[in-house]
Image (cartoon, rainbow, N blue to C red; front, side, top):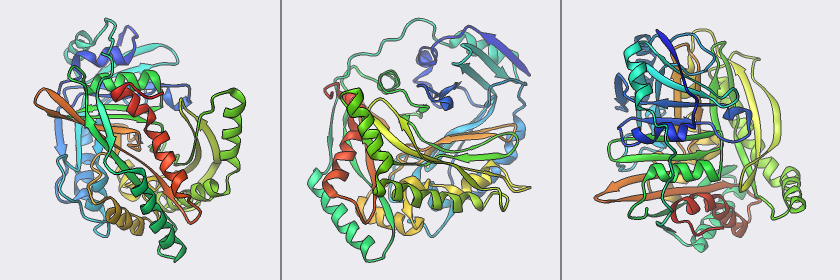
Length: 437
């Protein structure tokens, strides 16, 4: 086992030479939040696994094979293990009551087992490569980019696949169902689709997003002919080596203001909004129930409720739920208990997912799934794949699509909900086509 110190650099520069290598990944913490301290660069896994027919069996197999990776001591939370993505429809492989996946082009999950990880500490401005093989560590060090990387100007085009009026109609019908008692909340989304510019690349989109809209759970993952580009601010769940569990659902959004006064007023409006607080509380209750399936009785608590987190274009209402894993259970058991995230389904979860399936009529694939890592020491961290684009290579150009949505409750206003989707889409639109404010 080796811990090789390397010169610190911007991880966005470091991954650039490897961005087209299948199963290369950058889990990038950017921004001012404490959760943005670390970034991890991964390439050349010793094993790759894709979802089969039984999600629980896949997770159990991943747990068993973690023993293939031995990691050196170090401060970085992730120093080797599994990393990859769960698509939204992976949930149906864990619970047959969830809607079964429609035809899709991506696997429901894809993970690599990495015995070589480059970790970047943004707080101390230090970098290390952790590996069980000194030669592999030195080779990765030599492959990392050091020269400045400047993405080309965004020149693509993206449009909503349905007009705002149709989304508003979906919201009206859903509000009627909620008031009739069918469910409490559902998170429905709008699909935007188009293509990158002729000379553009998914990694360039990712770099533009990270620089213009820093977020603590950004991620880039390259598959053979697809790239997942995520600008996510939301953690799904974390497990520490001491078996502590944390999840931080986001529910409630306002745009940033044009002045300091307007910005503060919008944040205060969000904090005081009964509708947004109720929406957030419903998901907190759902997530408390979900993590309780894998946590010790009495250990689950909510230390932060309705906290404001501010990003480049939005304020969010965020709550935090904590617990402690039951004896004998692992981070994989926790993932099976909570996936997919309640913040992007609704409550009750299964009913909300059925409604989502009826409204959206298409697989979500990576959208609203999760990119996660599972460390050899039992730790885990994961995001919710919101603010995320899927890029698919088509001959000389890349198709691109993304979804933006919101939680609909009995008090939802259709016009306001449609406007919220457009606010959430702004940074992705700007990174793809460069013509949004």
